Image 1 (cartoon, rainbow, N blue to C red):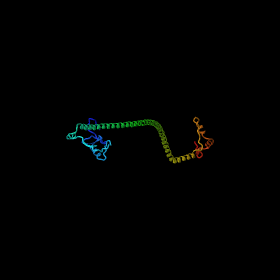
Image 2 (cartoon, one colour):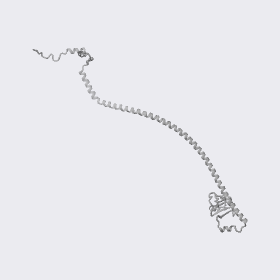
Image 3 (tube, rainbow, N blue to C red):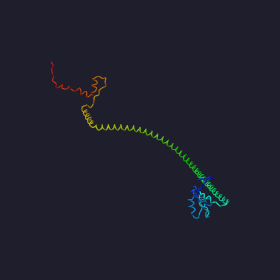
Image 4 (cartoon, rainbow, N blue to C red):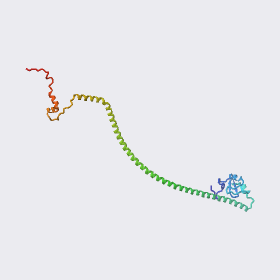
Length: 262
């Protein structure tokens, strides 16, 4: 709270109060004033010490409780009968008290402003340091992001290569799978045929054996086309076969009776 020469209200000089005074106030010989609440609490102790400047207030008139807005009767009688010089002396001292309060408030406000300015400078310094550290961290993070982007691009390239190789392997696998399926199907067909083969093999062996009993050991070989019919016929017989062939007599010639034709 601020107070200027034009203000008509004093402020409590208690450090933790600084409130506007009204009603009754406690005034000290060291030119300090306190609100009724803090004055009553502080000045009831012994020894009595000013809460503002720590001055000892041991005199009878060092502390007074006064009414800040006195009645008209009080104003008419408080300085009545006093000589003009005493009245002027009392008035000058009252004005000096008021001037000191204004000066004290001014000093307090300047002190508060100086302290706030010092805190502001400290905060600006800390903020500058924090900004610098944040800039360094941001630069480091940007570098890290750039390196991570490069690593990510490299991983993308490797992933693309691996994906292409995987697709090629999948195509090869599909081909091999198709080949495997066809071979397995063929093996299944062959296995089913082998299970049916014994009866067929038995019949085939029986047919081969019967053919060997009927067919001569040597099969006649015919000449190529172009030769005469007799040459093709007789050339297929070997010497022994031809000899036996011409020695055979016609069937039933010996037993057939001779018929004399007239």
